[in-house]
Length: 474
Ligand code: UDX
Ligand code: UDX
Image 1 (tube, rainbow, N blue to C red):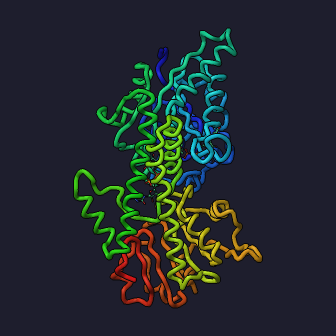
Image 2 (cartoon, rainbow, N blue to C red):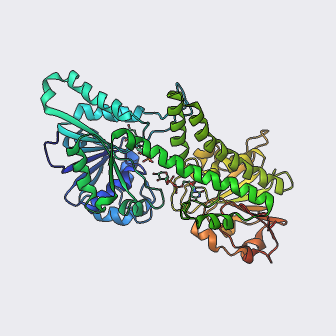
Image 3 (tube, helix red, strand yellow):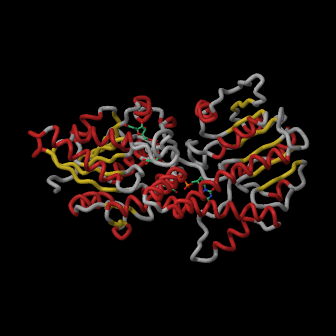
């Protein structure tokens, strides 16, 4: 039962979800005090830094909000205990990566941080606390959290009357790169729970800026499953159009024309129909694999296989592009220089998790290429971590190539045999190909995995051109 008005909020996890989400809540509800806690001290000091261009998360519009609300009603700290103690409402927004070992490895989510957070809440909360699952979780995780919270009564029997908890699921549907827009104008807000008071307490907050008819309430399990299902449907749509891109290349059809033609059907719609190098990001693959694990657990093997194919296809599709690049470059990229434009998994983010760029660059390195990488937001240290290879290091005798980072695109293109566009950054749409082709080694190639370049600008230049889902140019 809700015993007090919500005034103090704590969010555990200052990542891509926790940081922007709390910033937008603070901006829209100046009567709330919001504290975002994280175990990562460096991350917290970056959130607190006066260098607003270096926040841990890059999102258009985020730094302006942080400038307005930080230390007004939004605070970043590593003091977990006190933040929990003071909170009426706690969001759990820690990461839930796919398990790499143990039961369910490769499929199930690793819930150790969610569990650790729940234990901290159980120990330190005072009075009635609403605990909200913000992280994407397998269906029925709320039950686990409940059990952990309730068990704290046994441990501290004397304090039994002093605490109580209610649990809600409030999955995040923001997409990176448009997080602030998505949070300010969401298609819907989903709240799952079974206690009306707590649901209303959270609803009251969102109602400060979200129209009431966009706030959907369901039971806990529907809410948890809806998040997995939404991501599975979106990923499936990308795999569908990518599969069509391969048929287009084989037949002479053009994927953008097909997307447009089918998008006019209002039942299909235009969104999420851009063919690309394969979906990346921290959520799609992880959430589908989670769904697959869940299906297998319940003996629904055919359902599991159906969804698993979306992930398998995505992997095949990215590999198809790596192979195609090698084939076009006379079947060998050894000692050839290739410029990669874009390393983040999509534009307007510095996030590289599951980026198709990682897979494509690794494939080209394994084939001996010399790779130059340029990206407007991704740091070379992150690239080194993702590739597992230091910058400028040749592994002697391995046959493996090497990579280096060079931000300036025109300098980076000096003497390269090919340019591969992997991320659809806006700046790549207005490059001077006339200037680039001049400095590239001939025969020169452009591989555009996002089909964002204009053939008309390229057709008279001394460059071969491949664009996804279109075999008419090369
Ligand atoms: C989000 C969602 O919350 C998650 O469900 C989804 O599956 C992936 O995306 P995200 O915000 O992107 O997570 O993750 P990340 O940027 O890694 O941030 C999580 C933060 O939680 C990190 O800063 C990490 O240090 C912090 N954390 C983790 C804690 O503060 N405590 C812990 O016990 C574990
Ligand atoms: C996704 C969901 O959109 C969001 O609702 C959820 O909360 C988290 O997961 P995100 O991963 O940030 O968000 O990005 P999204 O815009 O969905 O793109 C995912 C991947 O699909 C990217 O690699 C993107 O490049 C790719 N994509 C997207 C395409 O290849 N074509 C498209 O038409 C759309």
